[in-house]
Length: 286
Image (tube, rainbow, N blue to C red; front, side):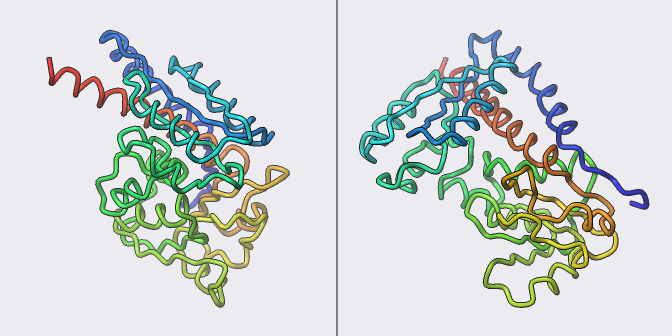
């Protein structure tokens, strides 16, 4: 790419949502409305905002948003009971547990209780394993968003060296696996990586997923590399220093307006896929 491309996440998200409208209409003809259940435990203001945003995005598209708000004193056992009820509810097609949860709750145990067919946020270890093996239906939404952006802008990972800075179980690790499955050569870096900038300088594709504002510097970026910034820090700041990285990159995601909007659209897409799967199973039993 000779001309620098700003990878517009809002345009990608709009395209995804538009593609879902007909699929939702077809489900409606079968008497099925996709439903996403969101569970919020406690009163964290940021979490409340995220849950509200996701709910509003659902409703604008005709997806039911079933919101469950539990008190901050909720125990692990009480949360597991709520998740189990949603697993058994045929009208619920996706379950999202907003994290972080209060410290008395075993978050991993709660995630693992979500039925794999309703794990539309890609948080279970089974879902991660399926993603790594290449047959996962619902990869974590931010990694899925990164690939969606690449597809939209025809960025081919095959044969490229991708450097992922970050190794979280719902971002760094799964996006590394997804890129590897697309025939990229992947280096996963993290806070213990020595000479980090030397690895980044080798990258054709850089995924910034470290959770530190303006961490990736433009001088680290190879001329013509693609920078995908999955960071979102206080003050609408990404993990890559946008101005300096944009001088070197052939394509780059802005923050805000890059990976974030597409992440939400992936959650909607996965919920619709789950509803379609339910419809197929229902038809097969008739």
